[in-house]
Image 1 (cartoon, one colour):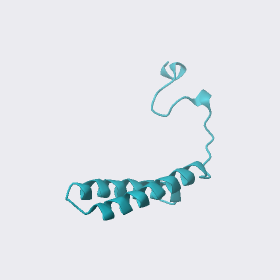
Image 2 (spheres, one colour):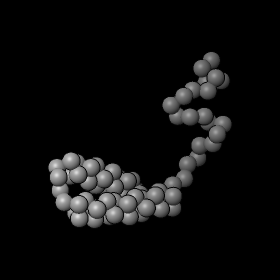
Image 3 (cartoon, rainbow, N blue to C red):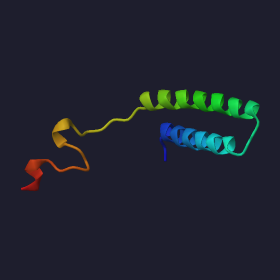
Image 4 (cartoon, rainbow, N blue to C red):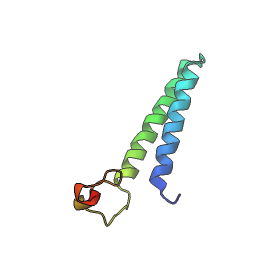
Length: 75
C-alpha cells in the first residue's frame, strides 16, 4: 500500500468511529470535543490528499466501467 492518501482515509475513518464509540461511554465533553476537532482536521487533510493524489490511468470512457460490461463486449 504505497498510496499515502488511502492511509489517511483509513486513519480518519477509524479515528471518527472511535470518537463515536467513546461518546457512547460517557467520556467527558472536553475530550470528545477535542477529538472531534482533530477528526475534522484529519478529514480536511484526507480530502486534500485524495484530490492532490498523483494517480493516472490509461482507461477512457469508451472502456466503460470495470464492473459492468459494455453491450459490444457481451457478443
